[in-house]
Length: 568
Image (cartoon, rainbow, N blue to C red; front, top):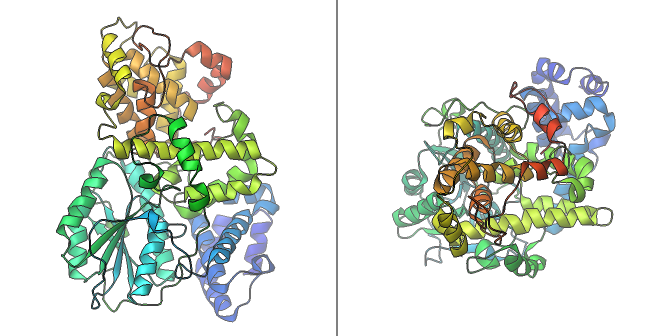
């Protein structure tokens, strides 16, 4: 095995070497795990953790070329940077507490949705219904579920429902998600936690699972869109009378219902409320540990090959191959950001031609990596990169949590009706203004406008599953300028964003489009045709801000999976 590792360090073909020797490696790793013989670059790491890490590394290599391999070929020093970061994070968790049992869990993160306080003594497990936060570690909902299971001395079960349809989710999103879920299953197995992939809508399958396997309580995460909130209400109604359900905000640092008890007007109104509570909620995480209590039930294996057979999703949107899903992929991107892009984040993050943004939004959306964990790691650079740290915290905490606040407290979060009175009035006043250009949805989707910058933005969205944040504002505002009505503009911008962006179908996306088209969280500006008092963005202003010609040249139509340097 050392010869194999040696060839990898010399810049050979890691994927081919590992693939050809996979069985041998598995046997060697298992033997090493039992004997405790480890390489010096794993010194200080528990055998179980080391074994799990090498497995993840091998599986990542087998899936295809990755950023880990690319970094290794460029510099041997960077090869195990990801392992160093994983080791640091694991040690940080241990320094917080040995487990959630010895950790002082803040119950303000939890909403008890039923009045039951006791768990039935003859129950056969606790169920964590995972949806928005698809990860094991650094997950307050998962930790709360394990705490309850250990306290009641019962097995811990985790389930994820594969939905036949969810909003405008396409096969691009489903495949990204599914790969991450496979990683979760492996980690749960190693931790003696049962992971179940269920087929169907949660309001139909969760109550049946609870009844069939005698679960004592259900814990779920928090997603403030109307459909997930409807599911939670329906599951609560259909659970047996003796089974309680709890909701844990594992997505926000300050829980949404704690940060504010009302709809906030702007970032400036929610910022002091969140800042005043960060000391209480911006803490480290204890680890999810190997579960002591095993299930005696016999469960069918998860059928990954058929997991998407009942999904009614658009298959025309191509899968994204440049990005690695799952927790490991998120850690890779975080490490890359910390080492290579954080320094310029404060000054250049709004330049689409500068590689200065975090690029973490796909993992944030699917909950594959914790925002709170990323904030804790960024804070390590306060002494040398304080302005960038503060800018990242503003975007990742204040702006993100403001989006959840808007969707949670405004049932019209995706409608003109959800805008402020001044914005509705100004849009109505100018809805019949003459438009120099009017496009339909098909023309917009296929980048057929007169504006080469807008077309390049749409191409980037389709080809890479992401659009630079600054340009997403320009993109949405031009849709307002070229659409027959404000209602068309909002509907089409949400449709295109949710269909193609990996971080679509998310409160951030709804708020981004509502800000651009309806002026939410913004103020009125000098009145002009079509926009009224809604903030305007121009092509000329973009030219003054960055190299538009270079961006247009880079994002002309091309192979969507062609390797390129990412600018967001």
